[in-house]
Amino acid sequence: IVTARNLVGMSDRVLIIIDDPFELSSVGAALRMHGVEVVAEARKKSTAINLFRSLQPNVLLIDMHKSQEHSVDIAHVIRKEAPGIGVVILVPCADMRLIGEDLAQMPAGTLLVLKDALSNLSALCDVISASRVFEAEQKVVWVNGGITLSDKQSHGLMSSLSDIQIQTLRYAADGLTNAEIGRIRFVSEKAIEQVLSRVAIALNIQPDHRKNMRVQLVNEFHKWIGAPTH
Image (tube, rainbow, N blue to C red; front, top):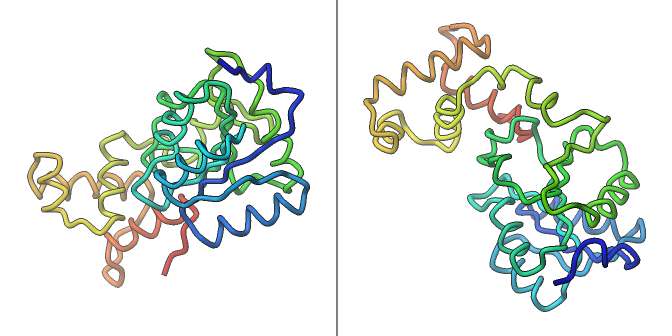
C-alpha cells in the first residue's frame, strides 16, 4: 500500500472535483497558473472515479455542495483504493450540516478550507501539498486562520439549530412543500410548519406581512452556503 509518507518527495498531482462548471474551470485554470499539476477536472462522482483510476492523482480537491452528490462519499470511495491520497474539501460555510455533510464521516486527515477565508491561491497550493502527509487516525482539520474545528463549529447563528431543524431548512430550500417534508420525516404538515417557525425565531427573522416567511428562510439559507439570492 502506498502511504502519504512515501509520496512526500513527489509533486502534487491534483484531481479537481467541483459540481459548478464555472468554479471548476476557474479553480483549475488558477491552480495551473500557480504551477500546480492538475491532472483532470470532473463534475460528477462517476467521472471522477474513472479519471482517478486512469490518471492516479495524489490529491483530491473537492467541492460538491451544489448537487445531490457528496464530497465525503467521493473521498471515501477513492481513499479505499488509494489510502495515501490527500483530501482537500472546499466548503462555503462553517456548519457542514447546511450542505448535507457529516464531519464525523470524513476521511482521516481531510483538510477543510472555508472558501470565504481563502486569501490567495498560493495558500491553497500549500494546503494541497500539506494534505498528502497525514496519520491514519488524524482528525479533520480546518486550515484557515489557525481556527480549530471545535472553534469553527461554535461560530454563527446556525450552530444553535438542531440537526432536524437544519435538515428541514435544507428540504425547504430544495423547494419541497411542508406536506412533502412531512412525508419524508413521517410527521404532520403542521409539525413542519412549527419547526420552520422555530428556525425563523432562532435566525432572528421578524414577521413581516410584506414578505413571505418561507422565502426569507430560504434566502437566509442560501446566504449561509454562499449561493446567490434573488
